[in-house]
Image (cartoon, rainbow, N blue to C red; front, side, top):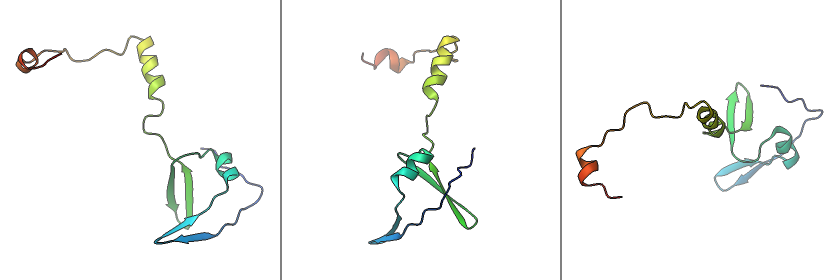
Amino acid sequence: MQALVMSKSIQTQIMKIENHQEIRIPRSLLEQIGISEAVEIEVQGDRSVIRAAIKPRAGWEEAFAKMAEQNDDVLLDDVTATEWDELEWQW
């Protein structure tokens, strides 16, 4: 992961709203580091690291397309109908 180098620091205030505290981050800074939606915040010693949250299924579409190209998108188990499938299931 590449570290972001900034030419100057940005100072902001902590805003108190009811039982919460918020830090406002300028849009230009968020755009510079590629954050547009959810974030992950991690404490590392005396520092907080804020980064874009990883989307749970990121890359799945490309992986499935590659599997289909290689004919590797088949079921591994044989599909066998049960008695319930035969008698109860309605299409």
